[in-house]
Amino acid sequence: MENTATDTILRIHNSQKEYFSTGATLDIDFRKNMLRKLLKAMNDWESRLCEALWKDLHKSYEEAYLTELSIVTGEIRNHIRNAGRWAERERRHSPLKLFPSRSYVVKEPLGCSLIISPWNYPVQLLLNPLVGAISAGCTAVLKPSPYVPSVSKVIEEMIHETFEERYIAVVQGNRDVNSTLLELRWDMIFFTGSPALARKVMSAASKNLTPVVLELGGKSPCIIDRTADIRIAARRIAWGKTLNSGQTCIAPDYILIHKDVKEAFVKAFAEEVRNLHGADIQDDTHYVRMVNDKAFERVTGYFKDGKIIYGGRSDAAERFIEPTLLEDVTPDSPVMTEEIFGPVFPVITLDDRGNTFSEKVIEFVTSREKPLAFYYFGKESDGWEIIRRTSSGGGCINDVIMHIANENQPFGGVGNSGMGRYHDKESFEAFSHTRSIICTGTWIDLPFRYMPYKMFGLVKKIL
Image (cartoon, rainbow, N blue to C red):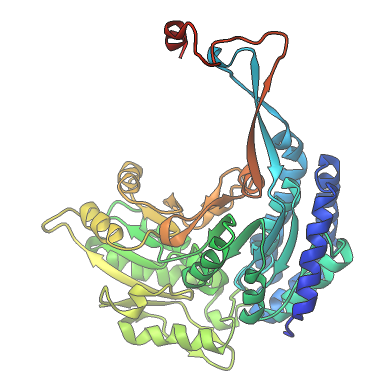
């Protein structure tokens, strides 16, 4: 992927600043029309986007549509329906001390935004934030990942055909381009990626006090209690771990399992992988490959961190890695300290000796960085108690992944897994500033607030 020239980036940045200053993006009808244009583009370019996803990631049409395109189009439709209501001036209660004033909250766009996305869901994670930028009334520069060149090129062509460059534009390239972009002053930066890169983004943003939304990742635990329905747990976990071949920011990363159900789960997991992907998963068109050779080598390198109890096959030529369960892993091994981002699954067995299983789970999870997701399988009331005593960006009880599928719920991280939220109204809010306005009548001008503060005893009672 050829880097966009620095001169081009500067020209786009300046033109978007000038365009935003004209006020063209403020009109709510303009915003809705732009959302409709994006929706039409998503439909017109569906086949080309899906072909590019297959070329870069071996992602089937069905998976591409379900996990990428449909999420974006659903978000667009939601914003078309609701952006007008979200943007309305809102009346707030005014206390007696402010008489004769009226109080309002106004939503205004932050301005020129920068959206940087990763490679694992290259359509969804670039265009979903764009929906929020459009509905809030911002301009946007989009920076897709160079690791999925086919997808990035198709998105660039689609955006170029759909929008004026002074409104929405795509720039391409590697981390040098990121550095150039981050040296510029933006009104909002939306970044999805690793915590390590997020620190660089936040450091750059701090120079101009630019607000950021950081959607990161981390090691999301998957808890399997003795009360879990093992067959259902195995099916849902196998689906969640093999979706995009584990290259999902909210994929279950490691398992904490009660010793009484460990053997049954391993057997059920193997059966459910076969049910999902056939006798040989390598032949399944729905099973995604590692994005590049570097990712393949990194993920297969985790095999040495434990004992393989299921899976373990790989094919470097195809960048194929079979779903693999590991046991006898140590808490400080690479597979337990790094985000795996692949189909390798360390399994840690816990029992009730000493502290209870729940207490051991809580102690283990809270001793580590806050994850993006948290999954519990077992009795619902026990799951709620463990959730109450831990922290994560989001999560599920007796399921995985699905909390991201509800467009009516916000999505985001906490601590090392990110900051800020988006989806639904939260996307609109992410690219908006909430402005408080007091409107005071002139038909009366009470003297109490003015020096020399006459009748101060009465003022104290009012306050």
